Image (cartoon, one colour):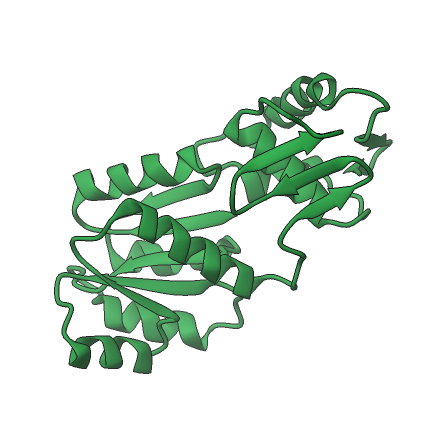
Length: 217
């Protein structure tokens, strides 16, 4: 999934990004509300993790504008205040969920995954293709009952292809949904990741290359 972290505390923002990337998410980071609004106009995020107390354009204003956009992005609002009144106010302006600081990273990850499921078409909890099974919640992929040793990016690519349910997925789409802004758009990283993933999946092959199209399972 593609996540935007909007947090003016640089150290916290980078810490959150590291945790989410370890979970296989593609994460972009900005530190103020105006940059957040610009990013959401050009990138289709699944979840926006939004600090409420932003300088300049306040988080409440950002949240309201995001809610008014024709976007699938869900908003998880963060705040230093955890009172019921603040939660109610945050939800009333368009936030989809609310998490007070300080928070446990495990809870943050769980809430982001729950919101991402709501932003996408309904999928089964376990993705299956023949003897290949992938459990997004447990972060486990198996083939013929044997667990696969996949890197976070390999897991994310496999998850995205399985979720496409036979649809051809272009390299550009994979780059946009699985990698973040730090990736060179002209890189061959998608092809390289697919080439590493194929032998790990074993035989018979499950990832098909569609000429001038992309990849599908």
